[in-house]
Amino acid sequence: MSLHIIVDGYNVIRQSEQLRIIDLRDMQEGREALQDMLVEYRKRKGHPITIVFDGTYAFSPDTRRQRFRGISILFSRHGETADTVIKRMAAREKERALVVSSDRDIVSFVRSVGSATIGSGAFEEKIFQALYSGENVGMEDSPNTGWIPTTRKKGPSRRLSKKKRRNRDKIVKL
Image (tube, rainbow, N blue to C red; front, top):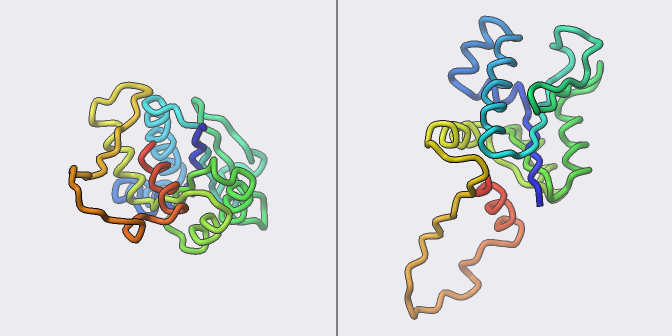
């Protein structure tokens, strides 16, 4: 099952130390810096990525949907927020989507429709790990479960809920 990463563009930019500085100088440069990071990440991992921005801040009103080196860039329509677009995409994609945002409203809605979420800061760390760890393209991380062989019974009381296990599995794929 392919994982579609939906990124709340301005949320990630404003939560990041490096991208926020670039964004304060010039909003277009901030968007381009995020796009460049995600292009390199996509080269390493191969997941389809869509970045959603508020169309109010777009440099040209006629460019609602773009493609940049394999990444979809989507601007919301006039009078519509990026949050609405992200929620609609998550509802359509359901379990296939992983939404990157630290906005509580988006996170709670996305979880209610069955999609996984990850915070902007945690996603940025995953990007840097993928870019600077020397991983090869297509290699999957083997999750370190921390399991130590023992005869002691733990039982289901310590097991994560099914929804949380699915969310964890999708994040591990990053």
